[in-house]
Image 1 (tube, rainbow, N blue to C red):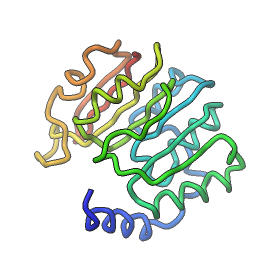
Image 2: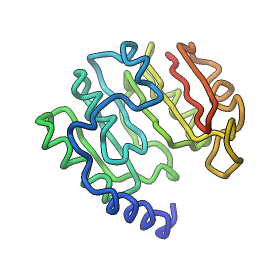
Image 3: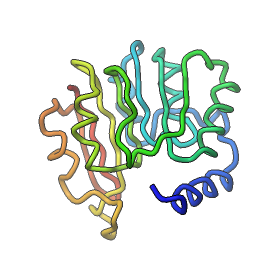
Image 4: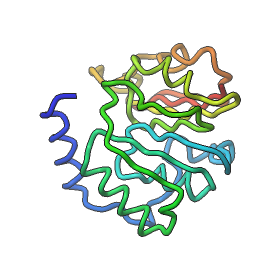
Length: 181
């Protein structure tokens, strides 16, 4: 990612300010399916932003590693986890996903909410532990205008066709998929 993009994200998160503890909840696309998320194991939260999804997973009982390109977002995520009282269950690091997934062991959950880079699809599948859960949501052209960061119709189900789909939908500018490896 270019330095300009990184600064843009840092500015965006700085403008938002700290996320309130009260906002911790399953990411919107997955709220109706929260019961399929495990309560033990390891999770990787890609493009974790302020850490709301990571902290929600940690509160469920998972050990979570959240990564994001924005140092500002990572600082906010670290602050959120401290305020939530579960600092031992979450770790956050700055990572440029344009360089690929950071190295690490297989995980039981991969959460990727509102971030899409098709170059990572194979690495995401490979990182899932057997039976692991992929929860991915991306901006979509379905019900919205086309754009460089929007998934085309059917993109997520095609990209992850080798996984067992639990639920998926697309419309109103959002595509999402829950699937097991």
